[in-house]
Image (tube, rainbow over all chains, first blue to last red; front, side, top):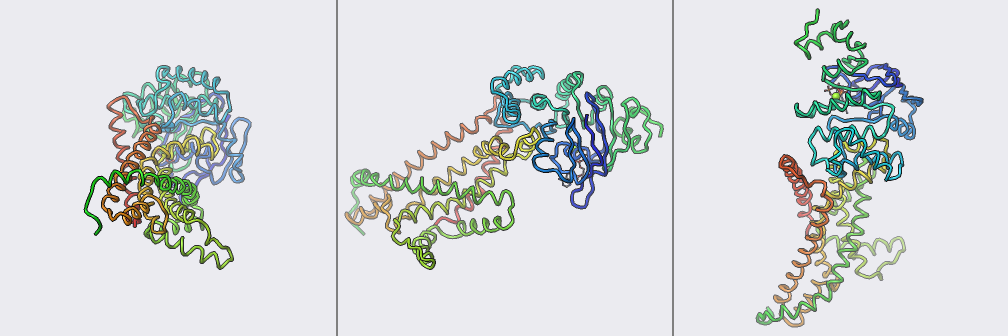
Length: 250
Length: 261
Ligand SMILES: Nc1ncnc2c1ncn2[C@@H]1O[C@H](COP(=O)(O)OP(=O)(O)OP(=O)(O)O)[C@@H](O)[C@H]1O
Ligand SMILES: [Mg+2]
């Protein structure tokens, strides 16, 4: 279980997150929606301390961390509880697909090389890249790179995987293959927090949808409820803009 | 000036000049070693923006980039012992070669630090974040992710620095070091066949430069093997990257040109 309590973040004088509270149950898929600049990325990056929250508390599994007094060691511990899939994939460019997936197992989890390799191959096969083990990122399509990114995250067996717009850098015809992989692992009960603009995906896969605007959570709930009967005006406006074919009573 | 031109001298000078190639290469190797260490020491405070050290590093780089290497040689050879005498350290008996390697090392270090800085900065930040996100520590992310890629980016510039250094070492003769240029001077003075000596000298420098360049190119290819794409779509990407490198190289080299004596 992940529990964020009163997470705040400012860049200089600009407060980007305002006392965010969010709970994610084990095995749940939470989708975060919201207009550009609403703080979705920042929130996700606070969970693994790529951004240092100004205040608040992060609990992942049995590990809790108070952001005001986090030491280097605490942060290092916290980061091992989660994994991240990036919009720009961020694969290690000098390493093959296999080496990318093995890296965390060998360096962070300290697994023997052979075991790391066996596990990594299995994961790459799972995301449909069994034939691309020795390809460098520059030899892979965007969709393939992102699937390596997902395998790399899975390898760490984290409590939660954080996805920041995993398909928005992809050509439209490659979005499907990546979403299919995310759906597949969602079904296996892996806890995830996903920032996305793919409404179809959010509807089908999410257990819980969060709508953010202006650094606060405006509204949250099960997808059927939030999409079909949004309560807040801002949510209605946003959904209307992003899915014009649906009619909301405003 | 001198005796009438006789090309046979060119050939007869080769072995004589080559006998001092060792000294030239020793200066190059020694200076590179000092230069790489200094380069890292100077680059780190700039990369991590450590307050006071950062400024000192910048002054250091400005000095070595902004003054002729010949002046630097004179300053260290004649000036350093004087300064150290004030604190009662006598280094006037140290071999000239020590001063020469020190000066070239410090000089190269200034350029090296800029190369290191530019190369490390060129490795995209996203990969470092990915490393942190998976739980790597700072030093692990640096040595496993940043350094190998930065090295690959740095090699073309590094290669230019080595060639520039090789040529710069020819100025060591002004302090009386018997490296190749010094030897050529002496041979010319002895026989009055100066031009032949210089031609012979130029040819040797050319061959050595060429060899070094080829060796470093091989190193670059090896370090960049992850950028050998197998489809045309990727080739476009690669050319862009290449152009990026060249711009990086050009930027650093425009600095280098200014500092050559
Ligand atoms: N490093 C930074 N320095 C200063 N301001 C930042 C920084 N990162 C984000 N911001 C600001 O924080 C706000 C929220 O940014 P964030 O990237 O979290 O939004 P987002 O919801 O992910 O938007 P998008 O949908 O465009 O990705 C924006 O106003 C942005 O300009
Ligand atoms: Mg974002």
